[in-house]
Length: 131
Image 1 (cartoon, helix red, strand yellow):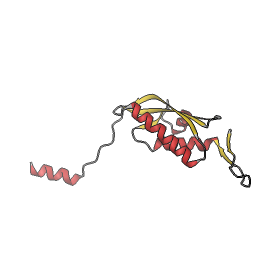
Image 2: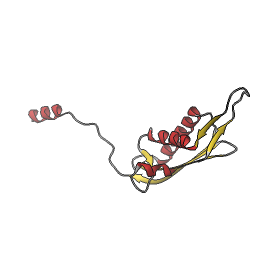
Image 3: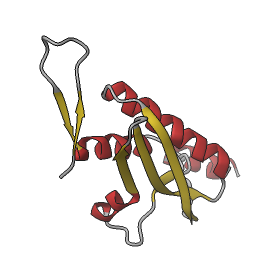
Image 4: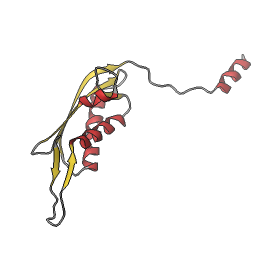
């Protein structure tokens, strides 16, 4: 397991070490917070979806690569930009790393229906009575 190290600014403090799974988890949460997008996976098992995230530590900062699926009704470029911004914000806010780049690959399209607002049964009975 790779470990990312962040050396403190002051010499009197200890060091902070993040496991590689921590950054993967932060990326997973950032994508899960967005509507009309989910991580790409060949199967529907949630454990396989973590294969859609690749994180590496470079000299410039952390590089993140993520594969996603987008709902057919959405603009792919807008969703990809929102994914990049969400990942960058969450990683930089929750760790002290600088994000060098976020690569988003759209590998699929979702055709399931967007949940609609349910109509209460009372409204349906009132409509039927009026007819």
